[in-house]
Structures are given as structure tokens and as C-alpha cells.
Image 1 (cartoon, rainbow, N blue to C red):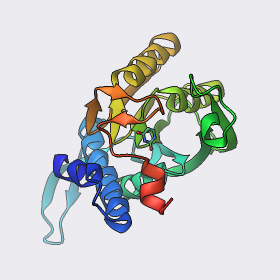
Image 2: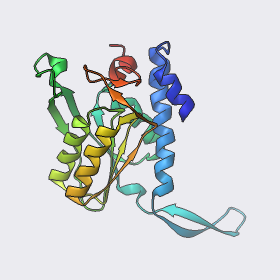
Image 3: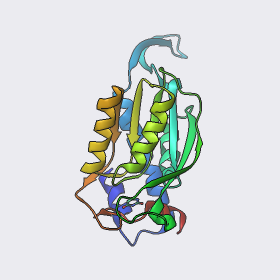
Image 4: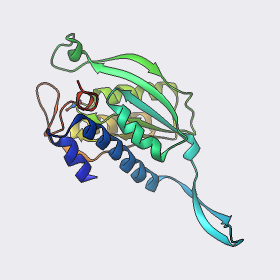
Length: 211
Ligand code: URA
């Protein structure tokens, strides 16, 4: 996972390699998530007529993946390789400053498109967004989910987060009393005045999609 992150951080990584690396990271984090998922023992019969004990994931068919557009798309592509029968939703969110409309200080978020499947208390909702910088976007998207339902669990998947973002997520968890976990490859120390994580990897959307 750290080798993939290094490729993502490297400014000389090409657009194609960057996109592929985000897919790889999504897959690797998906595998990590399965370690925490509830399993039940099952017995199957092999083609040799012998019985074999094994495991089955209890909630595999309850997974919903919500992609934060557009940068979350390659990460979701990797997650889908693990949670292949997940239902999917999208939220399009961007910072007002990207539109030249923000105050330039607090990185207000504009959500301009939401399309989610029905969510219930049985679902495990995975939210895919590679860069959790101020935590404003991920908080907004998590709250959109919580306004609709109280899923069994919310799992936030990203490449890099800051402590500020993690703290905002923890606050949502405390207030909602819904179990919220975060799966990321690194916690980076800083956000610069333009809202970029440092050392970070730059603008994940621009690098994956070619500006
Ligand atoms: N979004 C990005 O793509 N990169 C950052 O560093 C912060 C937010």
C-alpha cells in the first residue's frame, strides 16, 4: 500500500499511472475492510464429494458505495473489485473556491448532484473520496447519508487525510452514534493556504483525469 501511495505522491507519475494507482489503492483498502467484516462459518461440498469448512461474509450484499465525484471514481473502481455486488451512489461536491465563489478562507462546499440508492439500517455504506483535507466535503457527504438513514456502519475510504478531517469525522460519529471508520494510506501533517494537503499528492481529480 505504501509503494502505491509513493507512486501517487510522485509528481512525475503520469496521468494513466496515477489513475491506475488509485484503482490499486481502492482494491487494497477494500481487502483491509473485509478483515473487519462479520463472517460466518459455512460448510461446502467440494467436487470430490468431500465437505470443507469455510467462511462467508455476512454483509457482502448489504454494501453501498458512494463515490464523491470526480476524484473518488478510480478509488471506487478498485473497491468494486472486492465489493463486486455493491449498490452505488454518487455525490458531486466541490469547494466554492474552485468556482471562484468562496471566501477563500473556509473552503465552503457546494453539493450540486446527489443520487443515492435507498439506504437502511442493514447497510454498510462506504464513501470513497481520496483526499480528506479540511474534512468539509466528507462531513457534508456523511451527513447527507445520515439525514436519510442510520446505516449499520459507515466506512470512509481515502488515500490521504489530515488530523483535522479525522477529528471532524470522529465528531460526526459521536453525535450520530453510528459506527464510522476511516481507511486511508496516510495521515499528512498540513493543509496549505489553498486547501491542499502537504506533502500530499496534489489535486487528485486533476491528476487522475488530466486537469
Ligand atoms: N483535494 C485534492 O485533490 N488534493 C488536496 O490536497 C486536497 C483536496
